[in-house]
Length: 308
Image (cartoon, rainbow, N blue to C red; front, side, top):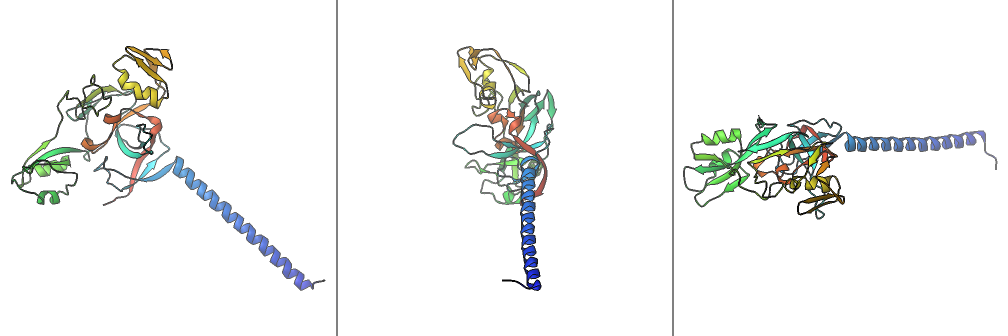
């Protein structure tokens, strides 16, 4: 069958439109794929937005805040807030992530004395957002709601039948409560020196530390040579075996690493010591020890959305 010239032209135009439409769809698909890939790479390696999922950094961050983190920079310094993977190995738990503040860098010495932080022997001032637990005694021995509402106190509660309370407060909140007409006394809750807290790293009686009196402890850096003995091996067991994947054995006073009898170890990574700003209620380096650099996901650079 022969077609008229007009019919042939119309068929050719239809065919060209079909090809052009297909090309447009392919270009759209490729563009979308490139955009999605770029977004994934940016989120995976450059910047990310994460939500605060606990109270460890209160009042610096509130539960539910959206925080922008920089994954590119590894130039960390003391005082930086970083987003980390929880470093404790537990096969029953999925990976968890949270924010902490760098208190000491690789190669630093660190100590807490009566809640005061010392880095390399120098006292360090806390930010105004850091909180501690305080005992609060009202003047009247009855249920109190006014001062709790006035200062929006939520973390803590009644601790005795005499209507004494314990709440987590910033320094500013402490000063206001201390001068409140409803309050008799406000006292900082503090552990005694040499009062051994077995929940504190390294959980060994040779290191009679607690959350308020901790250290002095050295923070290892890459290529450090650690001299090992039967006591300080408790500080470095997780570092050697878990974080740096060696087989560690201790037999009386003997230390074997990968089957070799030794009294030293050369560190392969940089480590940090981190603290939560909600100082007396945080799960931080005082509980689990050194933070290896590979578990740092990024540095917080901005709050994008404040959850109120």
